[in-house]
Amino acid sequence: MKANYREEFLAASMTLDMGNTDKLAMFAGEARKSNIALLPPCVNESGVDFGARAPKEGEKGGAIRYSLAALKNIGASAVETIAKEREAKGPYGSLADFAGRLDPKALNKRGIETLAKAGAFDTLEPNRAVVVANADTILNEANAKAQDADVGQTSFFGEMTSSAGGARATLKLKPAQSWTPMERLAAEFEAVGFYLSGHPLDSYQLVLDKLGVKKFTDFEALTARGATAGRLAGIVVSARERKSQKGNKFAFAMFSDTTGQFEAVVFSDTLAAARDLLEPGTPVIVSVEAERDGEMLKMRAQSIEALEKAAAAVPRNVRVVVDEKAACGSKLIPALRGLMKPAGRGGEIRLVMTLEDRAREVEMVLPGRYEISPQTLSKIGVLDGVNEVIET
Image (cartoon, rainbow, N blue to C red; front, top):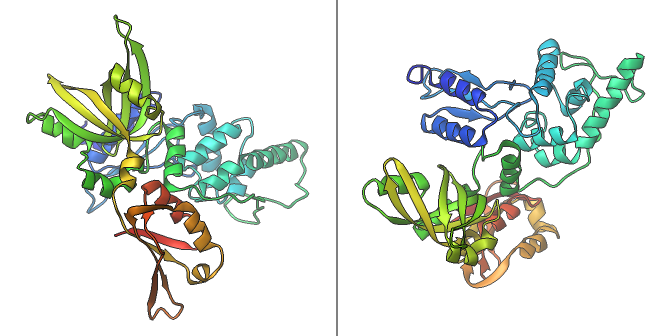
């Protein structure tokens, strides 16, 4: 089954273990290694079970659609309600359409926020922060429509029909600043239990290459050929402290990188020096010693350092491609300067804008040199008027 129906086998395995986040993360990693796309949860495509699609012509692998019921705070009965409504009246056409057709007894505010953080509303509203900020509005609309249906009335504010056609009401949504890529992934981790659509370390890759930091699977392969030490980058997933028989504290720390999750034992001296870095969500570099016990790889953390600090020490130059009107306005430059920390050995910031006639580009260098980190770059990327941020 696994050899001949890979997508179906993995989807069935994930459905069977949908309550076990560690196993889901393992299956997700296996899917990626097999060139099987892991599609995000979607209110118009997902159901209770994980769905499978065989490879199309020319594809190396098919796809697995993530289950809504596998998300945190979302029960199978709520997903069944969403799916039955979709099957009966067609796909949801907008957030207003979803709110008007939602059974408010099936989903609460926390459930709506979880769906938004996981990306389940991306086809209706790509700004996940807006959906989270308006979870109450969506739920209030669902309650209002349910009450109207109970008494057989039409809403005073206008009629709403299903996405099959006709007039559609609109929700008055309050604005919200778009999340940075790292904030988006952190919210996704909270809803899913692991990083699904990307990984926070993606934005550090150039820095990690310069620092000589290995990916876990690459290091694991090296240990099979005799390597016993290395430097790994990871996002802290958890740290469970214990006491030895002698009373010394140690911890089992779980980390996540772009290739999967790995664990290392952190003994008392290292734990005392790095305890503040072992908070979930913190990006770190871990120097490890490793030994093989059969097929198992055991690792001990020798030191742990903040990845953000190490990244900031690597000089890099950045080109910020901006909208012409924003560059000539009064807000962008102060906002940009407010994010930058001067550094004597830092990198240059260059602003690039294409003139309206598209005939030429204008480039200017901000005076001074700056400490440039991936977190800072992600904040620059969501400033109004910034089209693209390119490391050079």
